Length: 156
Image (cartoon, rainbow, N blue to C red):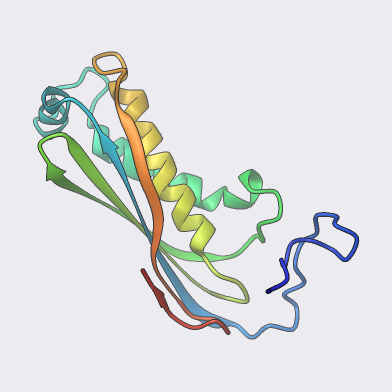
């Protein structure tokens, strides 16, 4: 069984020492979804919400959140993120799929930055639309792909 990297020999939480690792180009792609009433999705699509352009705000929120990842996840390293991308896709009449891509050149991966970006983008959509649809559901936050580093490429 593999050892957990964030747990010390006596069970205490610890930050992993990455000082001996090589810098490599790293990328992570994470998806999430937010399901809502079809009428809510249509209002987003037509930019008819009082709070403004929902997807523009959700994109900026995701980017900003990714840069704050080590402030939110206690044992996450501070890394220099070189790019964060957020894309939205109307996958169904009641669902928006969010794809967050994070890139960096460094000693550790960018999976958590992409996870935080996808999550906060979905939360922002919820926040901007909750006045008309409190039943929205955020779902299926998952790593789709990661590359770089010693462990190589992962594709779901």
